[in-house]
Amino acid sequence: MASESPQDTFARRADELREYVFSQPASKFENNPWALAAAIETFANEKGHMMIFRDSKLAVAKEALLAQQPAPRTILEFGTFVGKSALAWGAILRDIHGENIPEDVNVYTFDPDSKMVALTRDFVKLAGMENTIHVLEGFGSDSLNKLVAEGKVTSVDMAFYDHWEKYYLSDLQLLEEKKLWRVGSLAIADNTDMPGAPDYLAYVKAGGSGAAGAVKYESKSYETQGGKGPSVVEISVVLETN
Image 1 (tube, one colour):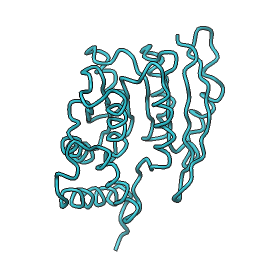
Image 2 (image 1 turned 60 degrees about the horizontal axis):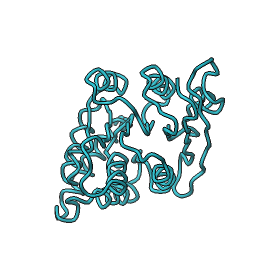
Image 3 (image 1 turned 60 degrees about the vertical axis):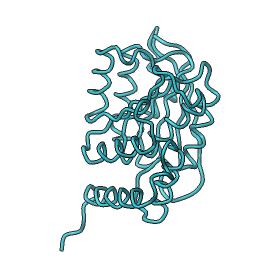
Image 4 (image 1 turned 90 degrees about the horizontal axis):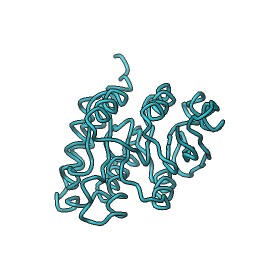
């Protein structure tokens, strides 16, 4: 018998996660994105082989977002998977802005996998965050271009990269091209140590392209503890914009 492909494993895990969450009382998660994010983490700990943004890494990113001035209003996420980090970004924005989140405070998360998009949309609805967290099906670059063309995104406070590592740099540079960064914006990237994103890492560590008038970054690697696999989160702060 042929072994199960990684894609089939992820799809099966997503089905199992759906059953795990929706078998519990809805009241446990209603209007509580933190509780739902925690349930996804618990499931991943029990089942394994889930490529989520773990709590140890999330704590580092959360600290950076809470310290950001002015406070973040627009977050982009390249790579939704099962929605754990998207729920967390929405929860952080609600912690910052209060229960009645302003209409101009949004998370846009992108994924080409229709199964993961459907699952995450159901989770977002369950947590009562559908007015803040928007799950878009398609490649991040295509979705972002559309959002910009429609005037829905004019500035970005944080972009999170957790999809195919080979696209990290081009997606970062797309924000430069669209002039979406502001001074103080954050680029947060997962898995830069394993499997690695060497071109992205070299670029932000060098401060950007180095061209006159280009976006300039200050970047730091954060080593986290707990679990196996990738442990580094790269956080880059925009120092100058183009």
